[in-house]
Image (tube, rainbow, N blue to C red; front, side):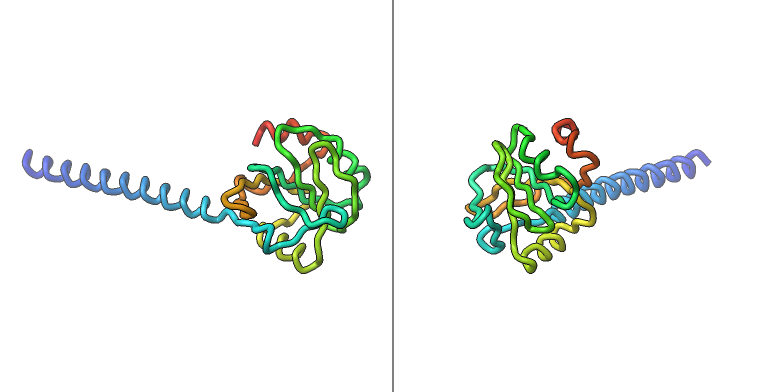
Length: 161
């Protein structure tokens, strides 16, 4: 009887170890899948404009804000924001604005705009995410895409990301 109980205990220990290892492997695979879900943007492939000039990124990291200029004072608030990272502000309506101290306002054609929205799965505006340089003009999404609830609180919300 003691012998039978011991083998049952060994079997349950073996199964527990197996399921524990399987759960760790599943968590690791899920993490890798979620990370690979982040998208790339190549500024040579997709053309964005600052007023009349083609935008060429120079910083290692950017905060990307996709917004609507039809919402009162959005562009003015974005132009005044001063954060530790430069901001790329992309307007859904492609209005032309003066760049701020730390904010670059971009616009683009309809095809590029729709491709951008589709690639990054943007469903609400304003939305915000980070991008990080990987090669010359190639940047990778470096955070999840979040809906920005209040532009006045952008600096506080950035600290939370």
